[in-house]
Amino acid sequence: MKNKKQIAFLIILIAVAAATLLFVILPPILYGTAQETRTTAPEQVVQQFYDWYVSYQGNPLVDKAYQGSEWLSPAFIAHLDDFTQSGEWRVDPVLCAQDVPNEVTAHPAQVSGDRASVEVTTSFTGHGLTVELVKAGGAWAIDKVACSR
Image 1 (cartoon, rainbow, N blue to C red):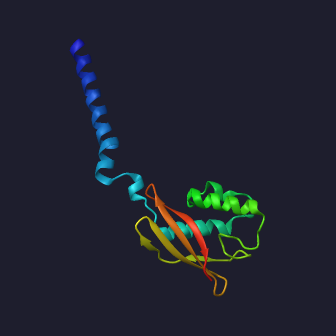
Image 2 (image 1 turned 90 degrees about the vertical axis):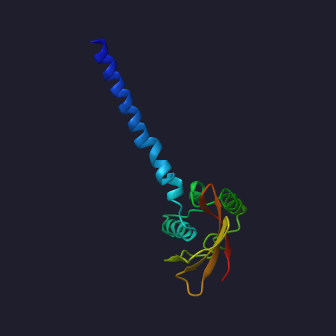
Image 3 (image 1 turned 135 degrees about the vertical axis):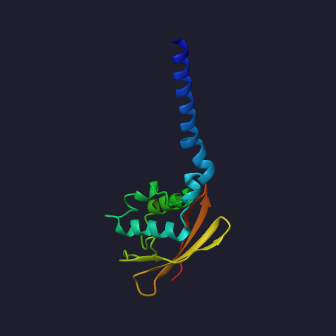
């Protein structure tokens, strides 16, 4: 009887070890980590952010809704915080416009190492801007918006 309990315990131990190997240890070795496989291109980051920004119900600057954004670098969040405290609200620094466009389009990125630049056009005739991104921790984040047109 004692041998049967020992054999059953040994079988359970081997099953747990095999399951751990198959489901926990082996997939990251074979397929990489989730962060490596989910890297979003810079233009996708820009498009996702601007889609959220222009569809936001209210004013994301006034509400400080941008503060928790995964699409923005800490430096750009600090810049927007400074802007909102200054009280000079002639032009939205994210849109480079006074009004919210109906549509924003991010064009293919120009990438150089851990920096990228994305040209953006809006539904306003002749209106565009340049969004600069930085890659940190394997993810792209918006670091600056330059009003170009």
